[in-house]
Picture 1 (tube, rainbow, N blue to C red):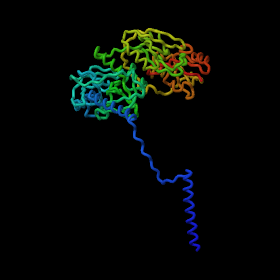
Picture 2 (tube, rainbow, N blue to C red):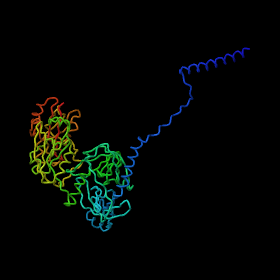
Picture 3 (cartoon, helix red, strand yellow):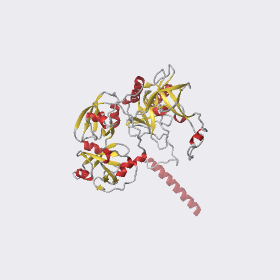
Picture 4 (cartoon, rainbow, N blue to C red):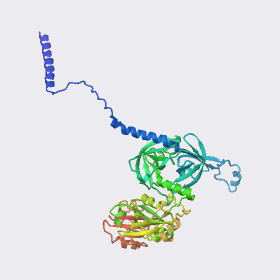
Length: 513
């Protein structure tokens, strides 16, 4: 009986529980569902949503189909004599004896790159560093035709070269205008990276007017005005075209920013308007006729803009005059070290690359209007442009920027600047071959990491020659600098002309803290 009662009680509880669920569901108080959930399928894209993607894909397909036939693979060979006998630690007089065992047969050393055909009769644009010092250049087309090529002309300053093959009715690229391209627009890079011929990659324009890349092998007149892209660029892409979504070439792929030497997402292309100017000069004159102001310039920092009285942080700062101050067109016109160039030929100058872009539109002998801010005073000049002068044989190596602190006397510290200085010691003059015009200044011997000069001045490298603002004063002693510093209050700016040993002069502006 007890067992029957328990069964009846359990049945009653189950019936009550089921009734409760039904009652609750009637009021939408609970939901009954399976333990596993079902994921609803994603809705199918509408035709309106798919169309832009299809159009973009079709544009990439059209670029690959129509532009790639005009892209070439370039092999540049350099012949060199390799020694079969090592000659380390030979006794005097034995060099001539062992020379007879040398392997005198030239052993070619080759490199590869890319280029693109710009005329049906065989003119091809590429990078200077692809064909520089090459004894033999060979060009291969997409259809596997191969031609020997001659270097018509090259320009290390812009890293542009023009080569020529003896052929007719070749496929050519369409030349666009990089000046109207905008950051964020689609671009395609075509070339021969890592031996993978005629590779097409896509990305966007990441930045324009990129400079300060410190690329190797560039001289002091090097123009840096790059288009930055995230389209994959690797060794072998150099010289290939960067193409916009309309299939027009807007740049020559030239460099990558990478710690490994391979693509890390940052590639740089030379603007086609610059390359076109170089090509036209080479074809017309056999060389590049470039106009120069005769100045070394740098980007404007916030302290520079404040010292100049600029509301915006923009312009190009005059660091020094090249190659000889007396021969500098800008110096003859009246510009001074420390001036901030704000317009050129009536065009606003925001950065160094923009000034270079304006000046390269002129020829030597022409005159350009320049406006500058000289410590809160605007001045205008007419500069009769000159031609570049080749660099001297003196080369500044990285080791010239280091050095051991000289054992000198007469050190003087300026807490408000965060530096210690002293007259330039004779041993430094002799060891560093410091010119007389620079030895009269004050050598910076220490820089406080918490002072305004930190990262602006370098100990045992920089010599303070002159103050430019708030007063112009030659600095020949610690007392000269003290006379200027004592007049400064918190928030003021001090602009200095500094000589970096082994390099050149530059302008540094410090904000007093």
